[in-house]
Length: 366
Image (cartoon, rainbow, N blue to C red; front, side):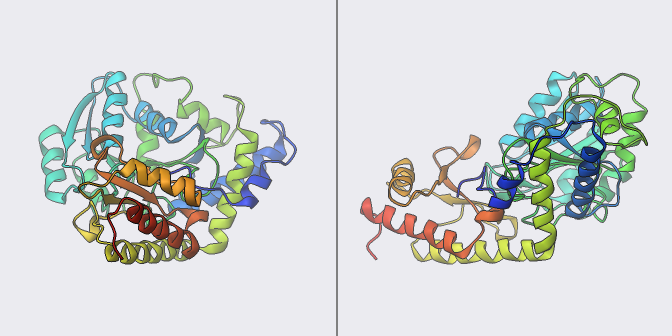
């Protein structure tokens, strides 16, 4: 019950045991087509430019940055946690001019703040993290695509720990590029980074003056393997068993339905906080509207050994809880409510772990 990887659905794990197909075999191309259709549903887009990057969320992040930006261009990074800092580090390595727009951990960016940055720096790309697993913050994206386009910028969004657990509308919100991770709400093992490009983003890629600096993440080549341009050519050996897993995970998402997924995660988030509040525990993110339902950050009370409580939960109940990361290290616990793990029984197990763990330290009388 940490911030990921979450447990995978047994159906997804079973799918990985199917016999291998050749990565250039026509039946495997059919599986890739089915994956793309599932991704379009989860992303809420009609764009043909969807795929899985062979790697984790970092691979998706790097693929987007290296394809959308050329050396000397500017990116404004919404840095409110470790993932903004990582994106800034990556972009700098590619010779991009990085504007690191910092925000206090636990806060979100306002439209006015982002508009001011777009006006001042005139970037090619604005990067934002919808759900930041290091801080438990949920950034509202509505209206930002239109704002970016009015200032000649593309909107790139990290949804690694939020996709499937909270609303996301790629087309309606004017998102230009997005990447995610397989091992969170989607309920598959680590190893795939779902990715989407809009028509605007693809135009930017195709009109580059220089090749993307990473051959491994060149979406001209990867996109051709996925059939973006009407043909298929070899780029790398597709992760056959991982693609089986993702096809099954997307099938399960379709059976439940996105609205059902969003409602379930929100309801369980609220149920967990009722129980935590009754114990005297407080949220790290002050504004309820800014709290991420898939990764919950809980303030560590003064005098409580957070690591000892984590060990107690694992040793006593076989429950994994996580401490803080980056700007929240030592300040919070992080509890994931994600996909296959998002059940009332698991939430109750988390609450029991906290209740008994605090009692064991003499910090809870009831």
